[in-house]
Image (tube, rainbow, N blue to C red; front, side, top):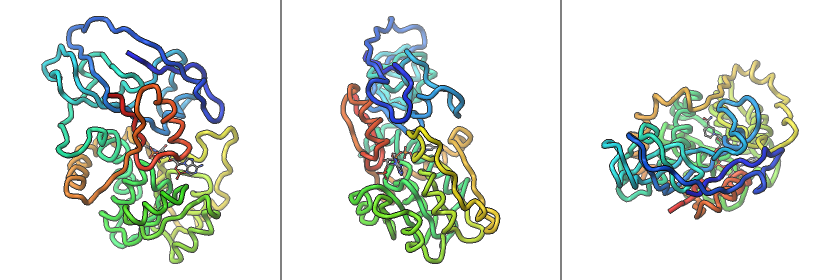
Length: 332
Ligand code: NDP
């Protein structure tokens, strides 16, 4: 099996040199174990935090260990009657082409009629659930709301815009970093306004796009986007702090929003979250999102990179904005 391991810890932007590829030979299957051929693996921004030493909400990767992350595979050998050969399983043994361990680490998922199983890593998986939790639990969207979503053309963002609309938002505004993404947000994802943050300061663009203010802000970016939103929020507005990708690869800490006083004077609610505390919403989410996908209420994009040897490149490309929708590595 081919595994990707952490070779050294990056400072600022990671590079290929921080990773190494090794060949691992598995022993024969033990009792209760299964062997899985990975079909797709996920590369996600949170993995950048795990390359660093020190406290995060998930422990850091260790140098010399194979990286882990979400993956979808097919059982190819099994000592578990609940995980028969041919079953599709979701698990955390990504960054390798073949995985093997106790069957309890793998969850069998239904095959999706007419849809690729990679959706279990995106719209019907962790990133879709993140958007759903953010807009229902953390900063609930109410009927008629004006909603702003940063990082709108990514995996979480493409889910969030559509979910906001389905929850009754009347105006949905998104930001992203290319003309192609901006076009897609309005043409395919139903955004009323899409802002390219590379064209002009996001604060100026947002003030024009939302002259009467924002009720809900779903933030994937942080930094200048959070500051811009704090200026545009209506009284009593709600902010879901989901991510701050503008700071993940910088060596200097980002400037704090200079307008924090607005939180007080406008009575804003800002709430950060990570999915760990909200897995109890998953069953409800899967039912709703499964139906939305099947009946066409929700659409999706995936940027697919092929081969384990290109997994690091996919990870780096994603953080540089090279993906539309969910970045996926196809392994077989
Ligand atoms: P995306 O698919 O959105 O990919 C990352 C995107 O970030 C890139 O495509 C790029 O798009 C954008 N980006 C990179 N640098 C910057 C920058 N300096 N300013 C603005 N945008 C930038 O990834 P995900 O959907 O998986 O994740 C989105 C966010 O959600 C991340 O912050 C992530 O950490 C967070 N997250 C949080 C979870 C939680 O439980 N709280 C769970 C999952 C994700 P562009 O071309 O537009 O710049």
